[in-house]
Length: 243
Image 1 (cartoon, rainbow, N blue to C red):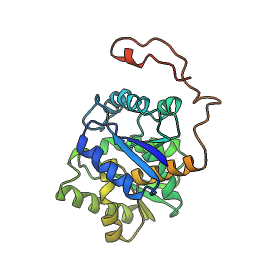
Image 2 (image 1 turned 180 degrees about the vertical axis):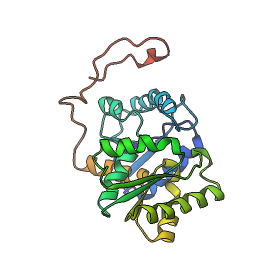
Image 3 (image 1 turned 90 degrees about the vertical axis):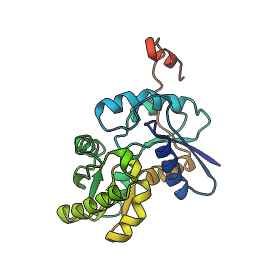
């Protein structure tokens, strides 16, 4: 049995449940996916400020699951990914990283459709960091807030933006740039006739594969456990050793 803890960095319970459904839909029969959300943090992650405040909650959820074989960070900004890899008991995969990797296996170029325009810069930055800048032909915003993605009008807006992105970028693959879009994948792919990659599903399968291969994050260098030291104030509970 493989045990995956999927961490939604925001505190929206309904979104956590939807993300969990998306992950379980693709998980193998021997994989148990536990979707969790932090008790502290923003209701949604739509800015650098939100992302910074979400990281302590993400790390707390990872620390609370020492028996998990692997972890997924289910926010397209991949908040706290490096820190999580330093402290997690198994491999950690972010959904933006997983989605971009997967998209490059399906076509020569991909387009990303995300939520608000202010998040485009972060998404472009991640494409460069992960080595996919050449394959990423465009990042487009549908201008729908994360917590409003489940309305019919929002779903129509995402579909319209996906169609426009394909035409503008001349791309082969679409990547949905928000964990809250996980349940839109099949409908958009059927409508537009191209592969549509959901990072939640892609990250779940990547973690499964890493665990099955007996692989975990290297502790040889940068991702070695952080040296123990006192933490003050609101972060006092994070004073612990990960050796």
